[in-house]
Length: 178
Image (cartoon, rainbow, N blue to C red):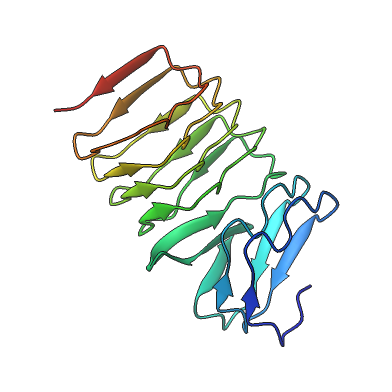
């Protein structure tokens, strides 16, 4: 547990803490830096204390304000469910949010989501089923990098650039909407 006196968790603060299994974030935390829990391969749940006005958790998934919008910040790498529906109202999937998950085969994104940040689904080797809603405008670098099971995808017409978004993925078919 993080002490209730802590207000900020810095960038990569717990990066590659391979023995960390769960995280309890107190109400006092108002800032979580980019990739604060990157590479924590045993985390199965993020829990946020009630009363936190910036962050929340839903079934162990960490949500909060990221780049001034509601975002899914971190999906637990060790969470074993095979499908997940991102909460309605989410506008962004944060940097590396689903990165390295070995279980997910399907992710459902809500209408209204706009941005998949860099490495959002990086190395989700079993991810084979995802539909990008027409509201998506931005696909970050390697947002689907190394997603080997992802064979086809339709890119919405509002997406202007997606440089390197599918680096080393399994894509065989891409449709760009007009």
